[in-house]
Image (cartoon, rainbow, N blue to C red; front, side, top):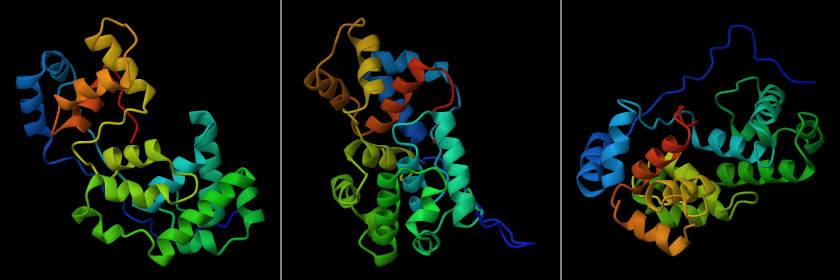
Length: 225
């Protein structure tokens, strides 16, 4: 049975963070790129935001793999209730305290149970250097993350953009980015990785920001964190 939070327990405060480089990035992109010059004003003050902690963010990405957004939310709520009742912050120790069968009861596949437990072990043992990430470059962090079962390069790059707020990530494996570059720069014609990389190189050193605006151009609603 899912465990409920103890009476009177105060949930962990989740702080929302916005990038301090955003305004500078918008000015830079507007000067250098004709598409960005048109796109950026369309979305006004909207900007990327990071919420939650690293472990929770990655655990949620694993839970949501290959299922619909609605199903992912349902499974996530059941999973967090099983762990400790706090949907906004899940702790590795709480996950490791559960038997695999208990986690499966929340709706996770056997493979995802293995992935979540491996993630928890990496965090609890210090195999990922969370406190050093701010001093590490993007590729070094990606290398740490893809060593965890269930996390590939795309997931690691999304984590860099949406959680760590790294300014210069170009996720060429992202279908939305490729579609957006095709529509905005190539009149809808298919675009190769080399062509997309060339477009992205012109966005440096703020490729994450340009990528966010390309996503927004496809669906003018807030991009989920």
